[in-house]
Length: 175
Image (cartoon, rainbow, N blue to C red; front, side):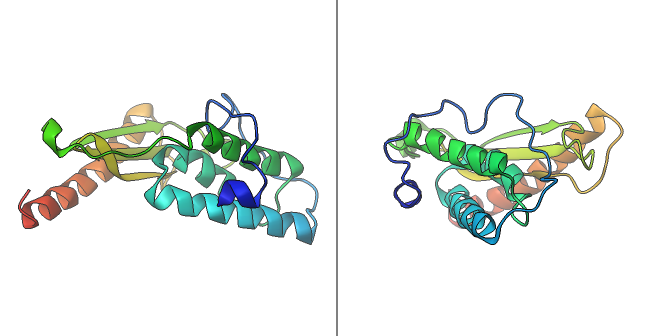
C-alpha cells in the first residue's frame, strides 16, 4: 500500500535501503507545511513496515525519522529511495521453517559515534528462530561512549536483555 500511495510500484529498484556512506544533515531552511505532511506520512508508513515485516529497513527509516519536523528535499528523496528498495524486495518474505531445527540465534552490532550531530553510537540486534527473524531493533545509544569496545558492550547488553526475555517466552510456550 505504501508503494501504491506514493506511486512507487513501477520505480527502478534500489539494492540497499540507503546509499552507502549517506549521512542525513539537518535542513537549514524551512520546509513547507505540504512537504512536512508528505514526509511525515511517508516516514510513518515506513515505520509501520519495520514493526512486523521489514527488519532490514529499520536503521534507514529510524535515521530518516529524525527529520520529520523539518525535512529537506534530500530527506524526501532518500525516503523515496527506501521505497525503491522495497520495490526490489517486495516478493521476499520471512519464512519460518520449523523442520530446519534452527534454534534461537542472536546477532548484534554497533557503530561507534556514527551520528555526527550528537556523537552517539548506533546499536542494533535481531533474533532468528527457525530460520527467520522474529525480533529486531536499531536505535541510537542513550549516552555518548568513548570507545568502540564500550559501544559494542552496550549493544551486547541490550541484546542479552532481549535474549533472556525471548528464552523465557519460548520456555513458557513449551519450545
